[in-house]
Amino acid sequence: MERTLAIIKPDAVARRLVGKIIGRIEEAGFRIRAMRRVNLSKGDAEGFYAVHRERPFFASLTDFMSSGPAIVMVLEAPDGIKKWRALMGATDPAVADAGTLRKDFAESIERNATHGSDAPDTAAYEIGYFFAGIDLT
Ligand code: IDP
Ligand code: MG
Image (tube, rainbow, N blue to C red):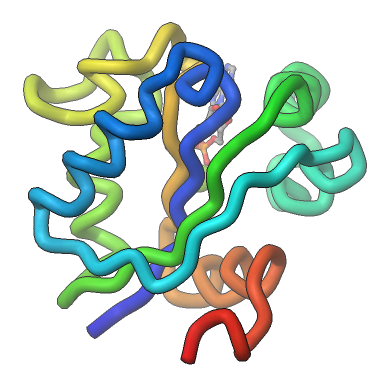
């Protein structure tokens, strides 16, 4: 089993897509090991996306991620990191495969409905950013 950090981003929460997205997560065979609604401050979003601080979209991305509530989750499945990224689809919904969450629900390359960790080290950092050990027993 492998854990990954998933976020239903503020664009999807605002459009009341939480239930549909969680339904797709469960249908795909993940277990939701922890889940919480958060209102990120600008600083919280900057800390979460610190690896992207030199990118041209960093200011806009962290404004977006702190613009409204999001749902943070720890998902678990065999090969969970890759499996969740496959269910999400490409960062840019314009090139995401049919049947992926971003193809179905994203508004743009920035407002793209969901987040997923990209490797075991980033998953560990991102899970620890939002959840304590006691949330994952
Ligand atoms: P990922 O979420 O598919 O892993 P990353 O490259 O890690 O994609 O980028 C993090 C987030 O930053 C994306 O999910 C998206 O919200 C935003 N983003 C990525 N590239 C762009 C861009 O070119 N313009 C605007 N926002 C972007
Ligand atoms: Mg990423």
